[in-house]
Structure formats: structure tokens, C-alpha cells
Image 1 (spheres, one colour):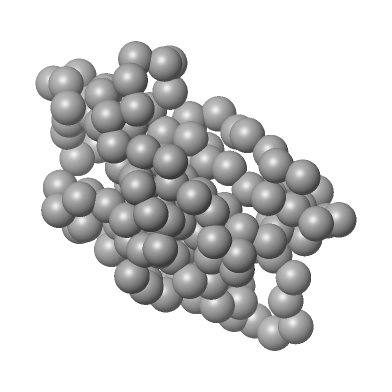
Image 2 (tube, rainbow, N blue to C red):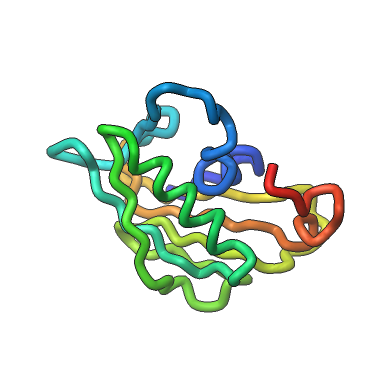
Length: 142
């Protein structure tokens, strides 16, 4: 089963999360998304994050991975991206593939997708839309 979620979730999931509550005393993270969750037997759950982003996104991806990994629930590990062409950003089992490209004026800044089997997340992608981020309105660290 494939689920599509709004842009705000994609950005919050892997890019904007470090900026949402900078004064928070403790990192908060979860391995679930609604009724879906990554199957795990121990904490923290290690999830590989495929780096398919251009240089402009490297710092943000690294910060997001570090911030999510500060929790006691998740430990994200950056690995070489294997999603192929960033425009298609193909999902890879057991990973979250993060890609950026000029996806066009389609109404979303970022798009997170998960594929689930039963209630378990099997793989995910996060697409970051450079069409919008390359404009002055969105091209800021915040």
C-alpha cells in the first residue's frame, strides 16, 4: 500500500524538523505515522536515510538526521542514495530515500511517501521541490 501525505509532513519529517522547536530541552521522535510504524525489536530503531540531494541540501539533511537521532527511539544513519534519478526518487526497501529536484509548480514544497505492509512501514521517500525553494520566498534557512 502506498500513502501520500501533504508537503508540510515531508519537510517536517526530514528537513524542517530541526527548526520546529529549537528551544526544546529534549528531542522528541517517533517511529510511527498515524497507524503505520516501522517494525522494531529494540530502541533505538536504526533507519538508513539515502542521500540523493544536491549540495545545497546537504547541511539541512545532515542537521535533520542528527536531530532525529538525538531521540531514544530513532537512530537515522546517512547512506549513499540509491533512489536513481532524483525526479523519480524510487523507494528502496528498509530505507528513507531523500531527493531534491525541480518537480514543478504543483502546489507542494515537499512530499513524503511511505509504503506499508499491514501496519508496518516498509520504505519511504521525501521529495524536496526546488521549483519553490529556488525562489526568494522559500530560499531561507527557516
